[in-house]
Image 1: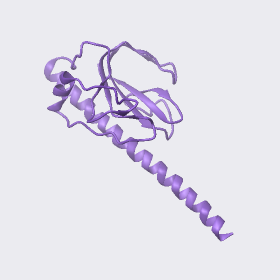
Image 2: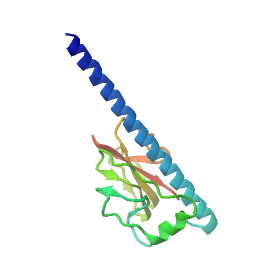
Image 3: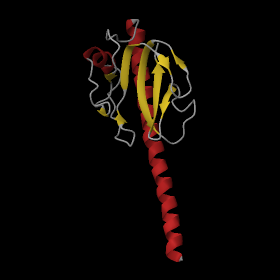
Image 4: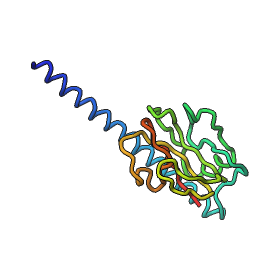
Length: 159
């Protein structure tokens, strides 16, 4: 009986610790995004616009992009634009299947599969949080794009 109670308590502690780790990784991601937003805004203030890549392509803006984003390349224009304002972050591997942060200077926009929110065309950041809970403000100041059992995909319009 005592062993069963200890097992139940240990299971509860593990779930609590795991949830805490997820929240800590998500807090780091939110901080990274805030720093990237500051860097892009500083560049735009000095140059009159955000870095333009000339195509509707998502580019990696972290030290590395991995898992399902491993094929996303870097862009020299974007890298040099923000290098003077921020060091590129490293997004820790997670259970989401995605790691890193992406930038698109000419995204066509679309409607969110999560809640049908309209995302107008423009300059966007794309990032992913691990699932703890998903509400319309989970990605704040960005917005939720998609939610699965493994991740919350977010987009944030810069312009």
